[in-house]
Image (tube, rainbow, N blue to C red; front, side):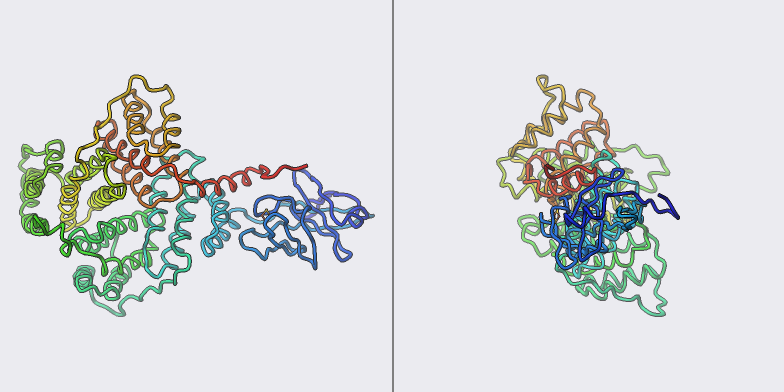
Amino acid sequence: MESSGQRWVRAGRAAEVHAAGRLAVHLDGHAVALFAWDGRLYAVDNRCPHMGFPLDRGSVADGILTCHWHHARFDLAGGGTFDQFADDVRAYPVDVRDGDVYVDLSPRGDPAAHHRRRLRDGLERDIPLVIAKAALVLGGNGSATEAVRIGLEFGTRYRAAGWGQGLTILTCYANLLPYLDDADRPWALYQGLSAVARDTGGAAPRFVLAPLPDSAAGVDLLTDWFRRFVEVRDAEGAERCIVSAVRAGADAAALARMLFAAATDHRFIQIGHVLDFTNKAFEALDIAGWTHAETALAGLATAYATADRMEESNEWRHPVDLVAIVETAAQALPAALENRRRGQTDGPARAMDQSALVPVLLGDDPRAIANALLDALRDGMEPVEVAAAVAYAAALRIARFPQSNEFGDWDTALHTFTFANAVHQGLRRGGSTLLVRGVFDAAMSVYLDRFLNVPPARLPEADREAPRDLLAELAATLDRQQQAAAAARLVTTYLARGGDVDRLLAVLGRLLVREDRNFHTIQMIEAAVRQHAGLRGTPAGTHVLVAAVRYLAAHAPTVRAQGQTFEIARRLHRGERLFEEE
Ligand code: FES
């Protein structure tokens, strides 16, 4: 029976439902539960929207249907839930004709629109299963960008402290999406979005400052003011400069110059997190759209103003004053860069390249390191190339990190690497000359990390005896604790045998998303994939991936509880049953 888009299907005899109180039926592929209550008949989807338990096994009292698995409650007539962890259940229109019950199965609504709304519910209440269900719909039909945008809007608005780990994790996963298999993309999206939910849970919202009214200040002056306010740790003044610059029409390059200048006015601030978060905010805006720049970038101001400065730390001052070395180098930078520009037109012969630079960077003479960097720039190396060499040296610290070190020191090496990667990405974006100071900061941090390679773990060689399916073996290896060396050998052997590096990256991504969220591990893999992009097919590219897999192996396996939640959502999404039906 059809009329005006309706699709009425006979479901049974009304007397039978009234007599039994309920009846489970299958109608054209739909599992439907019929209920009789207070003299009327009702029909709902028989799969509980929470985890699929059959609702005909639930209870009806006072017009409320209660699922007996986790006790979610629904308005029997409309299907609306009282329990946000569950979701509304679909209620079908019912008609009784000549003693027969008819149910209207015509499709309702737009699933993507529904899950966009549910994603916001999940973010507001930090409900991982709801976020996972939304990610499966939004990340599986090409609209992952929209889900990232929703996460960015939410994360920047509902965390008083501003940009934090949650948004950084979301951006890392958004960057990794193109490398992942189709089936793993919603999983990565879920991990990123649920990190935002956890980071904002219980936090006060942010109230972004308004731009300066009727200001004649251009971006250059606002940049000067911004740096001055950060210098005296004035977060509100700094934030007002950011939002005013955005509102004044500063483009992405101008905003990068503004923020990266202040991020490198002091040495290695907040062990690199401020610059790394700034770079991630820019990357998130590249994905979600620069219309969100005002709220996203304003949320960085507090971190700038409150960051620890390595001028205040003992290790950067004694026994060698690394701050003085970097500041002296910074004074020489304009002339070195000018020399490079002149040299470019004269066609210089380079005395220094990345392969010559890296051994110096891994040495134990910080003045020689600073001088080598300046020489490389004078000789015509681009700042972005010099930054890549420093990032590679930082990756080697991790690739050679012996397990005899204290476990927490993985993160000491990690912070240097992710900072070096952020400086590199910032310079690729066209960050200012001032950002080149960050290359020197990263190099000094690589120098300070030299004790983490004493004695150095050996870079592995290809293993002749290794199994044929090396990637399956890699996954199995990371099921056991402390397999850094074995995992590194497998990756080296796979690449030496000519294995498809894109498959390796996809598998590394899956091995990451299956673990419980670990901020540093996610940063590590994402930065390594970024660095590897410029090193494909080279020994250095292998070393960077060895660093990544060693770090991952050192931090795996976790309990994988978040993966279990996602798997439940995935089975529901596929229509699988999570219970044994009689
Ligand atoms: S409340 Fe119904 S399956 Fe959990």
